[in-house]
Amino acid sequence: MGVTRRNFVALVALVATLALAFPVFAHPDRTDVLLSRTCLVGNASLQPGQYTVEFVGNKASFLHKGKVVAEATGEWKKVAQKVLNSSVSYEDNGRIIEIRVAGKDSYFELQ
Image (cartoon, rainbow, N blue to C red; front, side, top):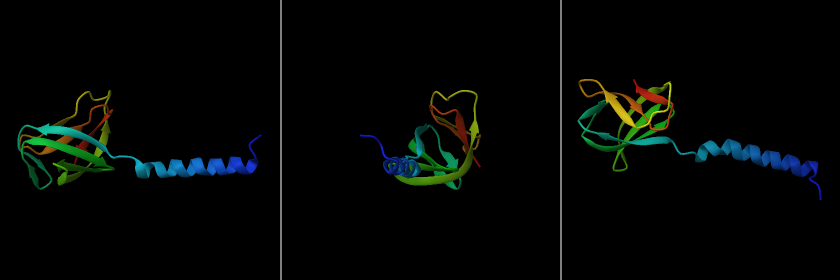
């Protein structure tokens, strides 16, 4: 019982369709960060506490208790080795300038 050409073509078409559909089901990158002080993201002031940062393309959304409280655009920049712990860096005025995500070999620089 061999594979016919028609079955082979159908199988290839199915695999290609699944491969193209996979990004639709992919979860965005996300990480949890603990802000120890009041921070600024865009025009939003974030109070100290636990936040989830979700990345989709060049946009970072800050969620607190499941609700988006701030958004910012930025870009991913490569680093020499994978980041061990998620963290945020900010300027003296509290404006967040970068987010490092544990396990990634890049960080997100906010614009």
